[in-house]
Image 1 (cartoon, rainbow, N blue to C red):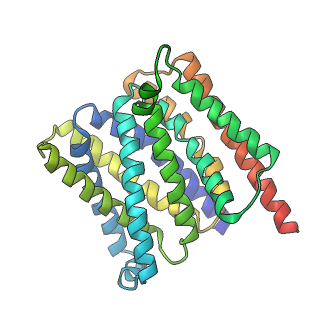
Image 2: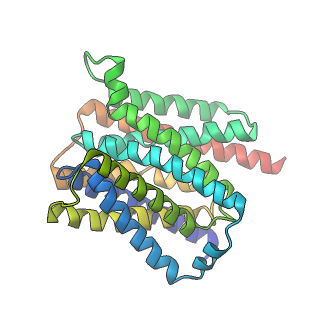
Length: 301
């Protein structure tokens, strides 16, 4: 398989896999608390990723981690705690998992903003239009009649704003270090940090480790498709194609979640939420197309 084709295939696999995360995690979080969910979800994720690492040549890299790479992994682990906890908190409190999946498109805005900040680049008009359109869509989705600022900050919208901004930092750092820190290392590191955090939170809150069997089944499927398959394919895609090209494919995740939420929970967004969600998808596509055009011009020059 050609490297570019392989990159697109991995990006599409990540898109399908991550869309199931919203469905399985929501089903499990309907029955268990967030700390209980986190302990089982990331313990299983660590098992899947660890098993894969032992059966691949990449596990040898675990014996040769430089001091700089270790610091990067530690910082990424802390970033993942904030980003992922906010994400699953948003999924837990929303009636329809399609809503946070649409709001997840804000991550691409932060990836672009941080990239421009670190690389000292300038926005094109197309990119600015895409950013404004995405934020407009996010605002439409989040609209609540009579709600105050605190309602937005503590609700799904505020949690997803925190989550996507920290995921933006994660993506920039992962892309920058992808040649020295392998996808498997990134995925295992993520699972370890989140498992430790969830276990500590479980003990502090005094929650039980006993959970319903149905929740355990949802977590088993979701942890394989999400923290393992999504993380590995998403990071691996960055080795073959540019992050912007991978992001274009992954921006369609919410559309798959939309169908899954309707099939599994019988939930469908309100008209204005669907309109706002489609605006975020259109905004991201406009943003990424502008970014790709700018990169082509820079290469020519």
